[in-house]
Image (cartoon, rainbow, N blue to C red; front, side, top):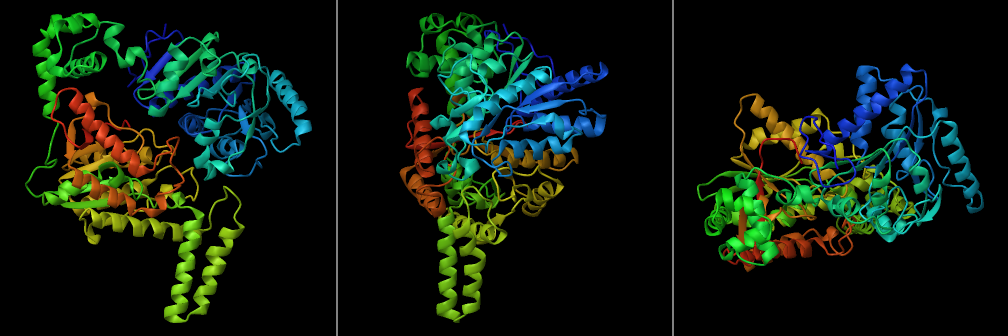
Length: 631
């Protein structure tokens, strides 16, 4: 039975889950909660003159925990001088100073910002010869015992159910050791190494038996991409296929989720089957659309018997009979269809695109329709997207610049500079290394030219295409800087300059390297500030990126696309040539972005068709922003 979380902005708990499970409105709220738990343990140990011992993971899930602990240290004098830290896992063969090293990540994001004595910080030596690894792992476990054992072990869950590098079908009694990485683990890490081929094949990890000896375990899982594995780990029978499920058996474990990661848990997905619910309009819509899916029937074909056979007796009693309930939902869903998404009166429209292709991939058809309807459409590319350009594209472009200078200007000096500043560094670059500033500039220009060309296909003139190049992105690596006032000011200045009537923002939870989430938070913070200052805030519509679509019950605006719209959208996507044929950040979906976009749009149209609404060729879907920061 899960424990109800009473902290602010916490969602309803997953009551039917055996292990204590806390579902928060956002990952930020969840991380703050966990940080407070860790801080409390550290303070208790300090008050007794004892050491606290923590086992920590690196990565995007726990970053919010570490940021809050750093804040507590700086502002509330949280003292980590007596604390000992142990890292959970590391890639084997990776030098400790490489960008992808988990040791370096934890040092940069946490250790060096705290007052932890370096002799209390323990990492794997992942560069030892193979014959020395086993002894090193035994020594690591001895150091954990000498430190008193883990007071708290902070873990994440991979999409394949792995915990640390304890991959599917590992032994539940395993100890700290060298392991071969699962193909899905390596694929998930591909963006960090700029190619799956660069990801190490082995890693060193705490064993499952070692983990289960911790006095307290906290497991983090955030985002849509984790929803399926969370469901399997918490609600299916414990299995070697999903090692994370074994953690349910620990004496003091808690699973900390955001709403997206919890979305497939029964109490979140179908709460009416587990407990009494308040039948609000939104809950009615969710339940009736779910019933359409379960019965394979259109809305207006549902009967009272269908409702009763699937546990919806209380809905019938409150809002029935079936024809009336179904007709209400039919009317709601019909009202979402908008062939003229912003009306026909001329308006100024501003589309924020995290990278220089998210606009056309996610809402290119809608942009085409808006231009056709006579609106003034602007696009703002929030980041340069330069780290997503392959080296061979940059090399080819530098080669082209060099030859143009030779043929048109006869300028051998410029050609020589191209060779020294662009081509030579690319030839000498090791897999996963950060690019030089000159190479990054060439890659930025590639994305710049592609975005301008794609916008032109949609009918958007060059003077309405804006490149913000937000500083938080400009690291040359997958890991980004925290956003600053400068990032917010650039967004605010553009809104003040254009004065749009409507704004579109990407709200994609499954972006594998988090840029979409950061860009959305920056835009929401600016709009919230405008509201507090008494300024007019335009209507805001949210779109999803290449990885996920809005659930049918959440869609508030659906824009039908005709075949010509889809063909033109495809042409715009094709203008992003550097993102075709082996783009760097495709995630675990092998389809190219244009294929994902077309199939997703057609699936959305088919979903409308299945519930008995008009059948369209394709549809793009949107949700209206409710004024919160949650993404």
